[in-house]
Amino acid sequence: MVFKMEKIINIGLIGCGTWGRNYIRNFEHLDDAKMYACCDFSEKNLQHSKRVLSSLKIYQSPEDLIADPEVDAVIVATPAVSHFELAKKCLNNGKHVLVEKPLTLTSKESVTLMELAKKQGKVLMVGHIMEFNPAVVKLKEIIDSKELGNIYYLYLNRTNLGRIREDVNVMWDLAPHDVSIVNYLIGQEPKRVSAKGESYIVEGTEDVVFLLMEFENNILASIHVSWLDPCKLRRTTVIGDKKMAVFDDMENVDKIRIYDRGITYNPKTEREFEDFGSFQLSYKYGDILVPQLQLSEPLKNQCTHFVECIKTGSKPRTDGENGLRAVKVLEAAQKSLKNDGAFVDI
Ligand SMILES: NC(=O)c1ccc[n+]([C@@H]2O[C@H](COP(=O)([O-])OP(=O)(O)OC[C@H]3O[C@@H](n4cnc5c(N)ncnc54)[C@H](O)[C@@H]3O)[C@@H](O)[C@H]2O)c1
Image 1 (cartoon, rainbow, N blue to C red):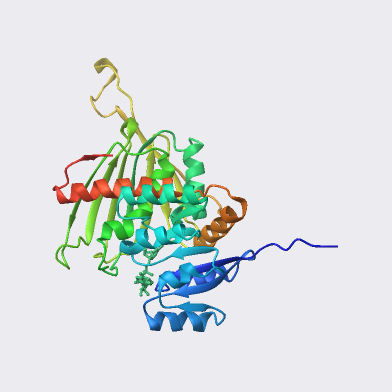
Image 2 (spheres, protein in one colour):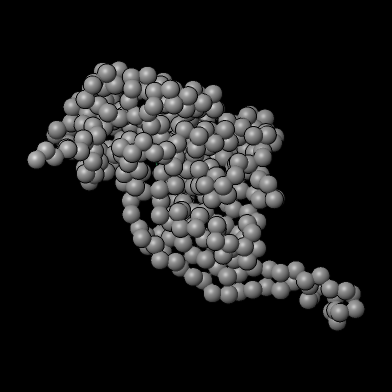
Protein backbone atom coordinates (compact mmCIF):
# COMPACT_ATOMS: atom_id res chain seq x y z
CA MET A 1 0.00 0.00 0.00
CA VAL A 2 1.32 3.46 -0.88
CA PHE A 3 0.74 6.29 1.58
CA LYS A 4 0.72 9.77 0.18
CA MET A 5 3.19 11.75 2.28
CA GLU A 6 2.02 15.19 3.37
CA LYS A 7 4.66 17.69 2.35
CA ILE A 8 6.19 19.71 5.15
CA ILE A 9 6.34 23.38 4.20
CA ASN A 10 9.88 24.73 4.49
CA ILE A 11 9.92 28.25 5.86
CA GLY A 12 12.71 30.76 5.28
CA LEU A 13 12.93 33.70 7.68
CA ILE A 14 14.47 36.99 6.59
CA GLY A 15 15.32 39.05 9.66
CA CYS A 16 15.94 37.16 12.89
CA GLY A 17 16.03 40.16 15.21
CA THR A 18 13.87 40.84 18.24
CA TRP A 19 10.61 39.83 16.56
CA GLY A 20 11.89 37.32 14.00
CA ARG A 21 13.05 35.04 16.82
CA ASN A 22 9.45 34.57 17.89
CA TYR A 23 8.73 32.99 14.51
CA ILE A 24 11.52 30.45 15.05
CA ARG A 25 9.97 29.51 18.41
CA ASN A 26 6.43 29.27 17.05
CA PHE A 27 7.23 27.12 14.03
CA GLU A 28 8.73 24.52 16.38
CA HIS A 29 5.17 23.69 17.46
CA LEU A 30 3.63 23.32 14.00
CA ASP A 31 3.20 19.89 12.42
CA ASP A 32 2.87 20.85 8.76
CA ALA A 33 5.77 23.26 8.50
CA LYS A 34 9.25 23.78 9.79
CA MET A 35 11.65 26.68 10.09
CA TYR A 36 14.19 25.59 7.51
CA ALA A 37 16.48 28.58 6.91
CA CYS A 38 17.09 32.09 8.10
CA CYS A 39 18.94 35.11 6.88
CA ASP A 40 20.23 38.23 8.55
CA PHE A 41 22.95 40.81 8.00
CA SER A 42 23.84 40.52 11.67
CA GLU A 43 26.20 37.63 12.42
CA LYS A 44 25.24 37.90 16.10
CA ASN A 45 21.54 37.40 15.33
CA LEU A 46 22.30 34.53 12.95
CA GLN A 47 24.38 32.75 15.58
CA HIS A 48 21.67 33.30 18.19
CA SER A 49 19.10 31.69 15.86
CA LYS A 50 21.41 28.77 15.17
CA ARG A 51 21.81 28.22 18.92
CA VAL A 52 18.01 28.14 19.31
CA LEU A 53 17.52 25.77 16.35
CA SER A 54 20.66 23.94 15.27
CA SER A 55 19.11 22.50 12.07
CA LEU A 56 18.66 26.00 10.60
CA LYS A 57 20.37 26.69 7.30
CA ILE A 58 22.03 30.09 7.56
CA TYR A 59 22.24 32.74 4.86
CA GLN A 60 23.95 36.12 4.91
CA SER A 61 22.10 37.40 1.86
CA PRO A 62 18.30 37.45 1.38
CA GLU A 63 18.76 36.74 -2.34
CA ASP A 64 20.50 33.44 -1.56
CA LEU A 65 17.76 32.36 0.83
CA ILE A 66 15.07 33.29 -1.69
CA ALA A 67 16.90 31.36 -4.44
CA ASP A 68 17.05 28.15 -2.33
CA PRO A 69 14.68 25.72 -4.11
CA GLU A 70 13.96 23.94 -0.81
CA VAL A 71 12.36 27.09 0.63
CA ASP A 72 8.58 27.07 -0.04
CA ALA A 73 7.57 30.19 1.83
CA VAL A 74 9.30 33.21 3.31
CA ILE A 75 8.58 35.36 6.35
CA VAL A 76 9.87 38.92 6.09
CA ALA A 77 10.59 40.24 9.60
CA THR A 78 13.02 43.04 8.75
CA PRO A 79 12.51 46.78 9.36
CA ALA A 80 9.49 48.19 7.50
CA VAL A 81 11.57 50.12 5.00
CA SER A 82 12.77 46.85 3.40
CA HIS A 83 9.42 44.99 3.32
CA PHE A 84 8.43 45.88 -0.26
CA GLU A 85 11.68 44.99 -2.03
CA LEU A 86 12.12 41.73 -0.12
CA ALA A 87 8.50 40.61 -0.57
CA LYS A 88 8.68 41.46 -4.28
CA LYS A 89 11.79 39.31 -4.68
CA CYS A 90 10.12 36.42 -2.84
CA LEU A 91 7.02 36.51 -5.05
CA ASN A 92 9.09 36.92 -8.23
CA ASN A 93 10.94 33.76 -7.20
CA GLY A 94 7.70 31.83 -6.71
CA LYS A 95 7.67 31.85 -2.90
CA HIS A 96 4.63 32.35 -0.67
CA VAL A 97 5.27 35.31 1.61
CA LEU A 98 4.16 36.58 4.99
CA VAL A 99 5.27 40.17 5.55
CA GLU A 100 5.42 41.74 8.99
CA LYS A 101 3.38 44.88 9.57
CA PRO A 102 3.18 47.33 7.89
CA LEU A 103 2.88 45.47 4.59
CA THR A 104 4.65 48.33 2.78
CA LEU A 105 5.18 52.06 3.26
CA THR A 106 3.00 53.11 0.28
CA SER A 107 -0.32 51.86 -1.06
CA LYS A 108 1.19 51.69 -4.57
CA GLU A 109 3.72 49.14 -3.32
CA SER A 110 1.00 47.10 -1.59
CA VAL A 111 -0.99 46.98 -4.83
CA THR A 112 2.13 45.86 -6.73
CA LEU A 113 2.61 42.98 -4.27
CA MET A 114 -1.06 42.00 -4.52
CA GLU A 115 -0.88 41.90 -8.32
CA LEU A 116 2.35 39.92 -8.23
CA ALA A 117 0.94 37.36 -5.78
CA LYS A 118 -2.10 36.92 -8.00
CA LYS A 119 0.02 36.51 -11.14
CA GLN A 120 2.31 33.97 -9.43
CA GLY A 121 -0.55 32.13 -7.70
CA LYS A 122 1.17 32.54 -4.33
CA VAL A 123 -0.06 33.47 -0.87
CA LEU A 124 0.58 37.04 0.23
CA MET A 125 -0.22 37.65 3.87
CA VAL A 126 0.50 40.50 6.29
CA GLY A 127 1.35 40.01 9.97
CA HIS A 128 -1.66 41.87 11.37
CA ILE A 129 -1.28 39.80 14.50
CA MET A 130 -4.07 41.47 16.44
CA GLU A 131 -6.62 39.88 14.11
CA PHE A 132 -5.35 36.51 15.36
CA ASN A 133 -5.70 37.51 19.01
CA PRO A 134 -8.64 35.51 20.48
CA ALA A 135 -9.70 38.54 22.54
CA VAL A 136 -9.98 40.73 19.44
CA VAL A 137 -11.91 38.00 17.63
CA LYS A 138 -14.27 37.80 20.65
CA LEU A 139 -14.67 41.58 20.72
CA LYS A 140 -15.64 41.49 17.04
CA GLU A 141 -18.28 38.82 17.83
CA ILE A 142 -19.62 40.98 20.66
CA ILE A 143 -19.85 44.02 18.39
CA ASP A 144 -21.44 42.06 15.52
CA SER A 145 -24.01 40.54 17.89
CA LYS A 146 -25.11 44.11 18.70
CA GLU A 147 -24.64 43.49 22.41
CA LEU A 148 -23.09 46.96 22.65
CA GLY A 149 -25.81 48.39 20.38
CA ASN A 150 -24.74 50.80 17.66
CA ILE A 151 -21.13 51.88 17.97
CA TYR A 152 -20.59 55.52 18.85
CA TYR A 153 -16.79 55.63 19.07
CA LEU A 154 -13.57 53.72 19.91
CA TYR A 155 -10.23 54.76 21.28
CA LEU A 156 -7.03 52.78 21.39
CA ASN A 157 -3.84 53.29 23.40
CA ARG A 158 -0.50 51.71 22.57
CA THR A 159 2.11 53.45 24.66
CA ASN A 160 5.22 52.88 26.74
CA LEU A 161 8.87 53.87 26.85
CA GLY A 162 9.44 52.29 23.49
CA ARG A 163 12.35 51.46 21.29
CA ILE A 164 12.89 54.39 18.94
CA ARG A 165 13.21 53.04 15.41
CA GLU A 166 15.44 54.52 12.75
CA ASP A 167 13.42 53.70 9.64
CA VAL A 168 9.91 54.80 10.63
CA ASN A 169 8.11 57.01 13.15
CA VAL A 170 5.98 55.70 16.01
CA MET A 171 2.85 55.74 13.86
CA TRP A 172 4.23 53.34 11.23
CA ASP A 173 5.74 51.23 14.00
CA LEU A 174 2.81 50.82 16.41
CA ALA A 175 -0.38 52.10 14.78
CA PRO A 176 -0.60 49.30 12.15
CA HIS A 177 -1.83 47.12 15.04
CA ASP A 178 -4.55 49.57 16.02
CA VAL A 179 -5.60 50.50 12.50
CA SER A 180 -5.95 46.80 11.74
CA ILE A 181 -8.04 46.31 14.93
CA VAL A 182 -10.31 49.22 14.03
CA ASN A 183 -10.71 48.14 10.39
CA TYR A 184 -11.51 44.61 11.54
CA LEU A 185 -13.98 45.64 14.26
CA ILE A 186 -15.80 48.29 12.26
CA GLY A 187 -15.66 46.36 8.98
CA GLN A 188 -15.52 49.44 6.79
CA GLU A 189 -12.92 51.89 5.54
CA PRO A 190 -12.76 55.31 7.18
CA LYS A 191 -13.87 58.28 5.10
CA ARG A 192 -11.00 60.48 6.21
CA VAL A 193 -8.23 60.68 8.79
CA SER A 194 -6.24 63.28 10.63
CA ALA A 195 -3.00 62.94 12.62
CA LYS A 196 -1.00 65.21 14.91
CA GLY A 197 2.35 64.22 16.30
CA GLU A 198 5.63 65.53 17.63
CA SER A 199 9.29 64.53 17.57
CA TYR A 200 10.45 65.16 21.12
CA ILE A 201 13.49 62.85 21.17
CA VAL A 202 14.88 62.47 17.64
CA GLU A 203 14.30 65.40 15.33
CA GLY A 204 12.15 64.47 12.34
CA THR A 205 10.90 61.15 13.77
CA GLU A 206 7.57 61.51 15.56
CA ASP A 207 7.60 59.67 18.90
CA VAL A 208 4.00 60.49 19.79
CA VAL A 209 1.03 60.54 17.40
CA PHE A 210 -2.71 61.04 17.85
CA LEU A 211 -4.55 59.61 14.85
CA LEU A 212 -8.25 60.13 14.25
CA MET A 213 -10.31 58.03 11.84
CA GLU A 214 -13.81 59.12 10.77
CA PHE A 215 -16.32 56.52 9.55
CA GLU A 216 -19.86 56.51 8.18
CA ASN A 217 -22.65 56.93 10.77
CA ASN A 218 -20.54 59.37 12.81
CA ILE A 219 -18.34 56.59 14.18
CA LEU A 220 -14.99 57.95 15.40
CA ALA A 221 -11.83 55.98 16.20
CA SER A 222 -8.95 57.65 17.96
CA ILE A 223 -5.51 56.04 18.23
CA HIS A 224 -2.79 57.23 20.60
CA VAL A 225 0.64 55.72 19.98
CA SER A 226 3.74 56.76 21.85
CA TRP A 227 7.33 55.70 22.52
CA LEU A 228 7.44 58.28 25.28
CA ASP A 229 5.06 57.30 28.05
CA PRO A 230 5.56 56.00 31.60
CA CYS A 231 2.77 53.45 31.25
CA LYS A 232 2.61 50.44 28.98
CA LEU A 233 -0.92 50.46 27.61
CA ARG A 234 -2.38 48.04 25.06
CA ARG A 235 -6.02 48.94 25.29
CA THR A 236 -9.08 49.26 23.05
CA THR A 237 -12.25 50.88 24.41
CA VAL A 238 -15.49 50.60 22.46
CA ILE A 239 -18.47 52.77 23.33
CA GLY A 240 -21.88 51.64 22.07
CA ASP A 241 -25.34 53.11 22.63
CA LYS A 242 -26.29 50.09 24.82
CA LYS A 243 -23.06 48.96 26.47
CA MET A 244 -19.33 49.60 26.49
CA ALA A 245 -16.38 47.23 26.25
CA VAL A 246 -12.71 47.40 27.11
CA PHE A 247 -10.09 45.03 25.71
CA ASP A 248 -6.91 45.22 27.75
CA ASP A 249 -4.12 43.11 26.28
CA MET A 250 -1.96 43.72 29.37
CA GLU A 251 -4.35 41.55 31.38
CA ASN A 252 -3.26 37.92 31.47
CA VAL A 253 -6.69 36.31 31.61
CA ASP A 254 -9.63 38.73 31.85
CA LYS A 255 -8.82 40.63 28.71
CA ILE A 256 -12.34 41.87 27.93
CA ARG A 257 -14.80 43.63 30.21
CA ILE A 258 -18.31 44.55 29.09
CA TYR A 259 -19.81 47.43 31.04
CA ASP A 260 -23.59 47.73 31.11
CA ARG A 261 -23.31 51.47 31.39
CA GLY A 262 -24.58 54.41 29.47
CA ILE A 263 -26.49 57.65 29.42
CA THR A 264 -29.92 58.14 27.91
CA TYR A 265 -31.25 61.51 27.01
CA ASN A 266 -35.02 61.80 27.45
CA PRO A 267 -36.21 65.04 25.97
CA LYS A 268 -39.46 66.08 27.70
CA THR A 269 -41.69 69.01 27.38
CA GLU A 270 -40.99 71.88 29.74
CA ARG A 271 -44.24 71.18 31.62
CA GLU A 272 -43.03 67.67 32.62
CA PHE A 273 -40.10 69.05 34.61
CA GLU A 274 -40.41 70.16 38.16
CA ASP A 275 -36.77 71.10 38.17
CA PHE A 276 -35.89 71.88 34.55
CA GLY A 277 -32.84 70.10 33.26
CA SER A 278 -32.38 67.61 36.09
CA PHE A 279 -34.52 64.81 34.63
CA GLN A 280 -33.45 64.88 31.05
CA LEU A 281 -30.58 62.40 31.45
CA SER A 282 -30.74 58.92 32.93
CA TYR A 283 -27.51 57.19 33.92
CA LYS A 284 -27.19 53.41 33.90
CA TYR A 285 -24.58 51.77 36.17
CA GLY A 286 -25.17 48.07 35.45
CA ASP A 287 -23.06 44.95 35.82
CA ILE A 288 -19.60 44.34 34.46
CA LEU A 289 -19.32 41.07 32.56
CA VAL A 290 -16.02 39.33 31.86
CA PRO A 291 -16.49 36.91 28.94
CA GLN A 292 -14.56 33.68 29.07
CA LEU A 293 -11.87 33.38 26.40
CA GLN A 294 -10.05 30.41 24.94
CA LEU A 295 -6.63 32.04 24.99
CA SER A 296 -3.92 31.01 22.54
CA GLU A 297 -0.79 32.72 21.30
CA PRO A 298 -1.74 35.13 18.51
CA LEU A 299 1.56 34.61 16.65
CA LYS A 300 1.05 30.85 16.66
CA ASN A 301 -2.49 31.32 15.29
CA GLN A 302 -1.09 33.61 12.59
CA CYS A 303 1.62 31.09 11.59
CA THR A 304 -0.88 28.22 11.55
CA HIS A 305 -3.19 30.24 9.31
CA PHE A 306 -0.34 31.07 6.90
CA VAL A 307 0.53 27.38 6.55
CA GLU A 308 -3.14 26.43 6.10
CA CYS A 309 -3.54 28.99 3.33
CA ILE A 310 -0.46 27.63 1.55
CA LYS A 311 -1.72 24.07 1.84
CA THR A 312 -5.34 24.71 0.89
CA GLY A 313 -4.92 27.68 -1.46
CA SER A 314 -7.44 29.65 0.60
CA LYS A 315 -7.34 33.41 0.94
CA PRO A 316 -5.63 34.63 4.13
CA ARG A 317 -7.78 36.59 6.57
CA THR A 318 -5.03 39.20 6.52
CA ASP A 319 -4.33 39.11 2.80
CA GLY A 320 -2.76 41.83 0.64
CA GLU A 321 -6.08 43.70 0.48
CA ASN A 322 -6.24 43.74 4.29
CA GLY A 323 -2.64 45.02 4.42
CA LEU A 324 -3.43 47.67 1.82
CA ARG A 325 -6.43 48.96 3.83
CA ALA A 326 -4.14 49.70 6.79
CA VAL A 327 -1.40 51.20 4.61
CA LYS A 328 -3.94 53.56 2.98
CA VAL A 329 -4.93 54.88 6.41
CA LEU A 330 -1.31 55.31 7.52
CA GLU A 331 -0.31 56.94 4.25
CA ALA A 332 -3.15 59.47 4.52
CA ALA A 333 -2.29 60.01 8.20
CA GLN A 334 1.34 60.66 7.25
CA LYS A 335 0.16 63.39 4.83
CA SER A 336 -1.95 64.85 7.61
CA LEU A 337 1.02 64.76 10.02
CA LYS A 338 3.04 66.81 7.56
CA ASN A 339 0.12 69.20 7.13
CA ASP A 340 -0.48 70.10 10.79
CA GLY A 341 -3.28 67.59 11.29
CA ALA A 342 -5.46 68.61 8.34
CA PHE A 343 -8.03 65.96 7.39
CA VAL A 344 -7.07 63.76 4.42
CA ASP A 345 -9.69 61.74 2.51
CA ILE A 346 -9.12 58.02 2.09
N1 LIG B 1 3.73 41.83 15.15
C1 LIG B 1 4.33 42.40 16.17
O1 LIG B 1 3.82 42.48 17.28
C2 LIG B 1 5.69 42.98 15.94
C3 LIG B 1 6.49 43.31 17.04
C4 LIG B 1 7.76 43.83 16.79
C5 LIG B 1 8.19 44.03 15.49
N2 LIG B 1 7.37 43.70 14.45
C6 LIG B 1 7.82 43.90 13.07
O2 LIG B 1 8.88 43.00 12.81
C7 LIG B 1 9.85 43.61 11.96
C8 LIG B 1 11.22 43.54 12.60
O3 LIG B 1 11.18 44.21 13.84
P1 LIG B 1 12.26 43.85 14.98
O4 LIG B 1 11.77 44.52 16.19
O5 LIG B 1 12.55 42.42 15.02
O6 LIG B 1 13.52 44.63 14.42
P2 LIG B 1 15.05 44.27 14.71
O7 LIG B 1 15.83 45.47 14.27
O8 LIG B 1 15.21 43.78 16.09
O9 LIG B 1 15.37 43.08 13.74
C9 LIG B 1 15.42 43.23 12.37
C10 LIG B 1 16.50 42.29 11.85
O10 LIG B 1 16.49 42.35 10.41
C11 LIG B 1 17.84 42.38 9.95
N3 LIG B 1 17.80 42.97 8.61
C12 LIG B 1 17.57 44.27 8.28
N4 LIG B 1 17.50 44.40 6.95
C13 LIG B 1 17.73 43.17 6.42
C14 LIG B 1 17.76 42.67 5.11
N5 LIG B 1 17.54 43.46 4.05
N6 LIG B 1 18.02 41.36 4.93
C15 LIG B 1 18.24 40.54 5.99
N7 LIG B 1 18.18 40.97 7.28
C16 LIG B 1 17.92 42.27 7.49
C17 LIG B 1 18.60 43.17 11.00
O11 LIG B 1 19.98 42.85 10.97
C18 LIG B 1 17.93 42.69 12.28
O12 LIG B 1 18.56 41.57 12.84
C19 LIG B 1 9.34 45.03 11.70
O13 LIG B 1 8.64 45.04 10.49
C20 LIG B 1 8.36 45.29 12.83
O14 LIG B 1 7.34 46.17 12.44
C21 LIG B 1 6.15 43.16 14.66
